Length: 340
Image (cartoon, rainbow, N blue to C red; front, top):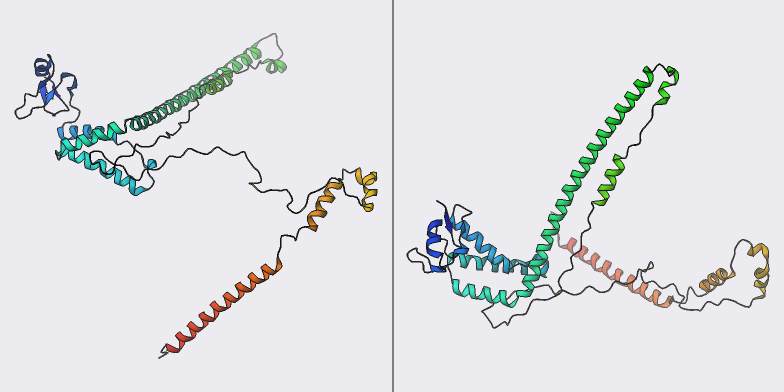
């Protein structure tokens, strides 16, 4: 005889009683004092010996399917802890029979209002679990392939050594060959086992698809409505900005600010350098001279000495005042201290 339980009331019934009472359709629970309407398809085998643990596991699974947020969905750790506390309050009320009807209504209302976000997070968690399972299976398969390749390589190496040994012995014992050249007649075979195993290993590698986080927000609840659970402290999901092109200078402009570099400057002193082969043969470019000269000429245009002097004096005056106050405090403390 096998006993079954129904998650509506968790009363034990034998399998024959379930078939006899509920085969025609839904019917009330036959246990005295229980008026729950039960259906045959919901009866199942008991998992835990203690029915209280059976009920708690089912209730926690039901609540976790609705409250399925993670810590990264909240702005602060305190908000996430408040969310977990709300989950425990709902679970405790359903387990201990405290305001069951009101708690269930609020839970159903929250689930209906945020059904899309709940389903998206559930799908995301499912994909994450599937990816972990696929990755673990791929790692196991990779380990099996590596061990098989190593075994095949070892067996092939042993077979090759045996074949070479037999050929050498045949060559040494053959009367038609000279013993001085018999050892040089051994034919070395090429081993393709290692290359084949490496190619199969590379072919078995799988690529993981990156998951894109959902950008949809929770539906805000009316603060004056107590029939729906309000989750506070949720992190606002902001779409990532477009990545700027790579800049090796990190935004630093190398263009001169105080002058515009020309390609040619009239100067009799430079006329000879423009045509002298001894200068130009080494690849020297007069534009480098132009750039260095203009940079040196305008290097001090952005420096204001009066401002720097004024700031340095201000700092020195402030340090002197602090030192004077510190000395006065030390002197005052020495006068009031009793050395005896």
